[in-house]
Structure formats: structure tokens, C-alpha cells
Image (cartoon, rainbow, N blue to C red; front, side, top):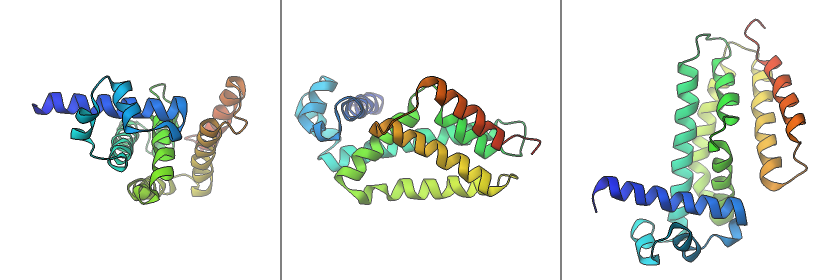
Length: 183
């Protein structure tokens, strides 16, 4: 199998796994279910991911890399240095492409199956937090913004009284006041 075809198949499998966790819950994540959702044989899935832990690790790695790349790109393209990392975190988290939601889906699966898999994400978040704390803004306010965003994700992911769309929008506007450029 050539590299492009292999990569596409791998991405298809990872997307199917993420959809299962997101739509049905992590307890429904089985190799059989993923193979069926991806429209491939279980043997085809095992070629790419020999076991469930490898599949979940693949989800975490792919989504973490995607989220961090978008985060870095947004910050690097921000014309204003003051607050760029915090704005990038907020905008990446609330972009319409579902990366953030998918990342937390993968986090949920990783935590459920093997907490050691979170080491990669812990390292990434340590780097993100360091950038946010050194963002030419009050580090307490920047950290409050990050933690509020993370809390919103968890409320939505676990159905813990997530705010409706109107409240969510008002929260976003309020958080933006914490990271105004002219602070």
C-alpha cells in the first residue's frame, strides 16, 4: 500500500473511531465497531492499529497535532503580539472545524483506556500554558480564559449542564474582555 493510500486509510479509521466515541460513548469503542464504521475489514484495521490502545493513541496524536498546529499558526499570523497566544487558544478552541471537540473526544477515550497516553497531551498543554502565561498580558487573566474554555469543553463533552448557544456566545464575549489588546 503506498504512503498516501495508507495515510488516507489511517485517517478514515481515526475519524470513524472519533465519531463512535463522540456519538455513542467511549464504552462503544471496539475494533469491530471502528472497522464497520470505517467500512473496512477488521484485518484491515489491525494492519494500521494492532490493538485498541494503539488506535486511541493514534486518535490522541492526530488530534493533538492538528490542534497545536492550528493554535501556533493562529498566533504566528496575529498582527498584535500582546495576547496573541491567548487569542489563538480561544479562537482555535471555538473554531467551527470541530478539532477541539474531537480532541476532547480523544482525551476521553485515552483517559478511559490508558491514562499513560495522556503524557503527550500533558506536555503539549504545558507548552501552551507557558505561552499563555508569557503573552504580555496578566498571566492570571490569560489562565482564567484558558481554564474557562477548558471547563466549557468538559461541560459540553460530559453533558454537565452545558450553556445554550446564546449563553455560550455571551461567555465568549466576556472572555474576550479579559484579553483585550489595550489592557
